[in-house]
Image (cartoon, rainbow, N blue to C red):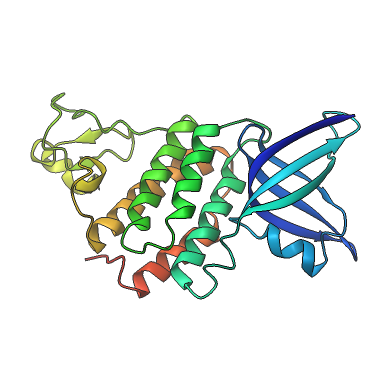
Length: 247
């Protein structure tokens, strides 16, 4: 009998049959995993396992390569807490769906897990979490091998005055040195380079445009799938709330 216990972020519960369900989680030391939950279709079982909640899960199976079964206990409830906050709930769904769509199965990524929990725990702070979410998406790209280089200018090698990113190379560029290619570059919001710079709604817009480009063109293109719809919904909610502005 194979068995392990771990902290895990719920990525969603899918009903199967009349009473059963499969639970997908991102476990800190065991990566993205999916397993059966006995009676998972019941209201009592479903409530703690909503996406974005942190659980203490125990997985058991006859062999390591089996689907197995989960038992779970609530550790941090977030879905119900943000039920009345449309923007926070959209952020929770977007983060869960990005993890579900992007992560390989069974690969432990504890640093990404800890960063995801930080974002989830800040969803009650609307002035803070959109910028934090963008930084988390940059981290997701890096940890999956698609990271951007925002340290020096791709043209001159300088490390100051960086204003744009090449959509092809993912390297930072000084707009003053880009010449006729400037309109082909992606704007780089200052808050991604200077942690003391307060992000404006326009900065949030260009930040999500930046990470969205590389998520789609690098990560999800390699996976042969599109961007999760929940991310588009989150951006729409933030724009309606005035937290994001195309300028």
